[in-house]
Image 1 (cartoon, rainbow, N blue to C red):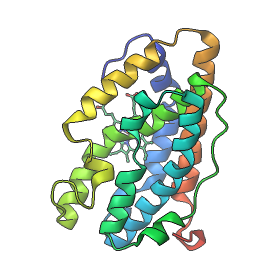
Image 2 (cartoon, rainbow, N blue to C red; image 1 turned 45 degrees about the vertical axis):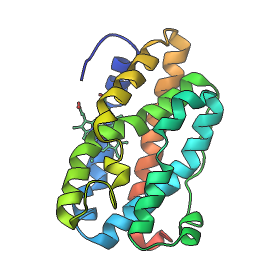
Image 3 (cartoon, helix red, strand yellow; image 1 turned 120 degrees about the vertical axis):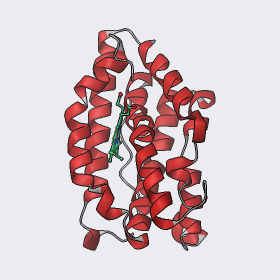
Length: 196
Ligand code: HEM
C-alpha cells in the first residue's frame, strides 16, 4: 500500500486507531466460524450499507464512480444463499444514515467501506475454506470484486488525492472516523439486542 503525502496517507494515519479498535472488537474469526454467526454478520453489514450507500450517493453525486463500488446487492445475494428470503432481507434493521454534507465527507465515509475490501480478502478466503463455498456464491460480499480489488482501490486513492484543500481534508477525516465508529458500534452490538 503506497503511503504518499496526499489525502489518502492522511486518512490512513488519522483513522489508524479507529481501524485497530474495529478490528479488535469485531472478533471476526469467532463470528464467521459458524454459519449462523456469519449470516448475522452479513445481515449487519447489509443494514449498514443500506443506510450508507444512498447517503454517500447523494452527497457525492457521481454515480459513474460509486455504482461499481456498491455492495448491497452482493450482500443480499449472500443472505439469499444462506437461506433468508427477499422479504426478510428487505426488512433487516438498518443503521442510522450518516450526515454527509458534500463530496469530501462522502469520500471520507466511502474510504472506510472501500478499505474494508482489503482486509476482506483474507476474511473471504477463510470463509470460503471454512464453509466450502465455491468462488463467489455465499461470499460475494467479500470476494465478489475478484481481481478488480487492486484497481478499484488504486482509483479510489487517486480520487482522494485529487482533493487538496485543508477544509476538505478535515471534512473527509471527520467523516471517515465517524463511519469507522458507527460501524464498530453497529457490528459489535450484543447479539441479543439485534433483530438480525
Ligand atoms: C469491517 C471492518 C473493517 C473495515 C471497515 C476496515 C477498513 C480498512 C481500511 C479503510 C483500510 C485501508 C487502509 C489504507 O488506507 O491503506 C484497511 C486496510 C486493511 N485492513 Fe481493514 N477494515 C476492517 C476489518 C479488518 C479486519 C477484520 C482485518 C483483519 C484481517 C483487516 C485487515 C486489513 C489489512 C491487512 C489492511 C491493509 C491491506 C493492505 O495494506 O494491502 N481489516 N481496512
